[in-house]
Length: 612
Image (tube, rainbow, N blue to C red; front, side, top):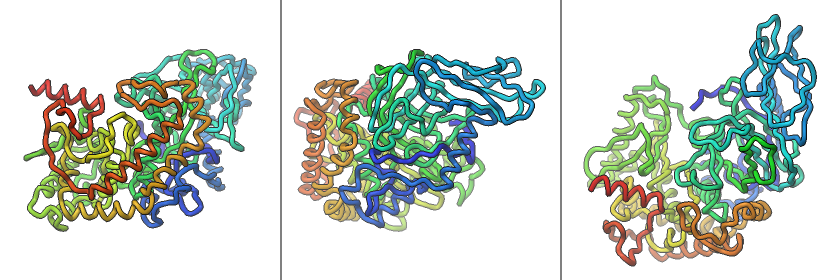
């Protein structure tokens, strides 16, 4: 992770009426929460206001820009252009564009480059307007008597051979002909066009036009033709540059998700908006349509990639996960008590991982922040988690002083289990299962992450009946959730919270309406998406068996009907925890336990093979 450039803020971004996916819990007017509130603040506000109306879960309303926002945007533009003036701002062009350079530095010459490198005293001397005919990262520097003077400037210009109008925001990425990236960051020009009056186009002036880096992300999803990426906005020194994006607070780090086996396009957004209204922390997100040019020619119609979800990534910061930032020197209490971000990530967890001692140990518990975890910090948080693990096995696990309530935020785990059981995703509790611990606080469930294969996206992958928290096929990352549900006190809290939510955001009407509200603004974008990727009636998508229909609307109906059926089964179950056997792999015919998703099945088979 690059060192954050403090104090950098981005270009002004106003949210269009067609924007979908809430920045936070909606209020009575349906407006998103103010963009300067953190996830934690928004989750607390959601708990106070109660579940939003079904009509509040869809398109976000416009955000009004303040004078401070405008000033911040102007300052960020100056950060990238430095002490250089560009007669034509960065953006797209057809055929050619003429750019004249100037400088605010007195008695200076200007030298420039077009290869992405900062100019030196031996770079080409500027002598008149430049004619650009291909995608170019134009970088310039003022020199006085052969010495660089002032701040360098950069503008990015993306050549295109086509124009296209859209009613969703456009994200244009051009890799300067370098091809598709792998797992390492590669330079890319990033342009974001926002709808004005309901539409935007490839020729519109971008709200953000910046240097950036991007790389392939995901595990099984990395193999999709419609690939997901990580994006990092950069300044002239290749450090992080913070830009506000589509009403979300300024930051440099973003995740570009590619709904592909999820043919509704909205399952992640469904989980995030629902979770936020339940009081859980979730990333902000926006739907965008993406053009990605990899071949070095002008951006064309074939570079259209469809509908994506632009997510905030999970990181400790005032506008995202607003907990204490654990420093290298925080080695003793109370400083060492937070903040930590961890996740269970079966067969994919990376070091540092927390070890477990004793019986029925957890596995694959990774610490994601701090990214420079010190030995003393690892020891402290390991001991804390071990105490929780042991408390769940104690004679009185719900004791407020010695049981699990002493170590976890109980309400957050109640809400998480309810949401995960509604989603019934095959790798719930196993992968992307995030938790965090603030300084002086308890272990808290969340933020939510990665629900695109839940809610009946996979045929037979989300059975209407059964519990996801019960270990299946004899393995799991942890049995904490089962132990919690087996405790009468915790189970009663889940039952009471379920009844409360069923009269609000989990009512049949609101479950159906949430799908409708999220998808209504996507109608035109979905049509373009499935023209590019005509997989609605294709069973095998990447490694996954998927739902097949003739139309996108039928996909939405499948999800809506399943949600109501799943909620009805939970009603009838009374949250009663049944027997938890450990059937052999593969499961016996007719087994009712949830099947493994393909990437988990392969990992389980590898583990069994290595241990046999």
